[in-house]
Image (cartoon, rainbow, N blue to C red; front, side):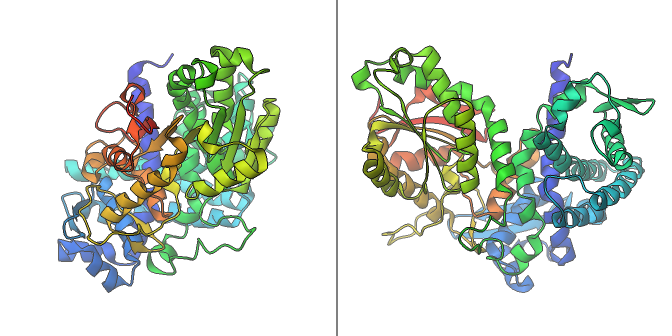
Length: 540
């Protein structure tokens, strides 16, 4: 049985793995391009000047530098008053620079693996990975520096390497169902699960080295630590799903900022593995679903004439949230006792066809009747029109819900701003390579909420959302938050995660009111990167 302290230690490893998946390619490309060396020689530097000197896209260069600051390797100064960003080296900058060679082979592997099928174990990447495993074993036993700061950075970077090696493999094992097959066996041999038992066995040796498996006479058995990570494979899914972006950071930061986003109609997205993203989101987010049950039970226990006609899940992903909500209503509310007389109108909406396909499949398997339609979160009026024309239902008569979606709206310049205000967010935001003013990003969110206000003021908007943290705060709590991974993957893909207090202020300025009874944040501290919010059109 894992005790509380062991869980904390394993969770720290997981967060540091996620840090590594985004930090290794970020730090490596800036090193190869000479940005690191310039920073060390120049000292305090203006990000705009660095962008000009190195021919970089300032928006993505800003995201990259903020990622390194979140790992404690640079100081990051954002002057929202003047809309300027400066970075400067600190005591960790030189040790990090001198050990960036540790990333060489895992970054090469990250790029190389992109040539192969994302759902299969194939021989060529296996062989390359095996060589890196061996080298990792050797590096793990390097002579660590006697200087405390350097030693800390060395260990931090080795954990990053471990994350790049382990993370994608964990996700592949999780998505393929192999972990579940392992769970069914007290002990097993590699040949039971893969035709290339030699290579597969070497991969399991790596996990045994990490303490996830016990190996005896060529057989493997899960340890308590291994079960902890295997059961949390989906926690790696969202970050790993952005490997297509992380493989192409050189082009993104120093080349064509549109290279990954110019997609012809009907073609799959280039910047993210959407199927993996949906899988990771569904698994990672399930733990928050329980927290919203109180709101749903209260709403659907009211007199029937005061209840919503149903629920619209904007950005339905794989349908898991809708399925959970239906289950709660059916089993725990008065509405659940009268579904024959007052059916629950359920709508799953998503921008992505892969997500719509997954939602339809899962709703059918759960034997839940629902409509699944395409829609854009930035155009609620279009969704309202389609619902009225096709199903004769008003969007405003539904409870609107969404999970981790509002930050993923398509950028629009806020209209009607004649005087530039001063933003308060510490985030780094970009659109197609251009650095965005933080005040405009905040006003864009206010405008976004204002669009939805007419449709949510009656029955409310239930939102689970992702948030950023100041980089200095993240750096002071390494291993306690996934903020670096969130900031990198979302920053490089033109998504806009803001601090909780900024998120709330923009909703209020748009005329929405937060019900404090239902508000929750995770963790419940200054490190909160996830919040649950229930907004309505009037105070309660």
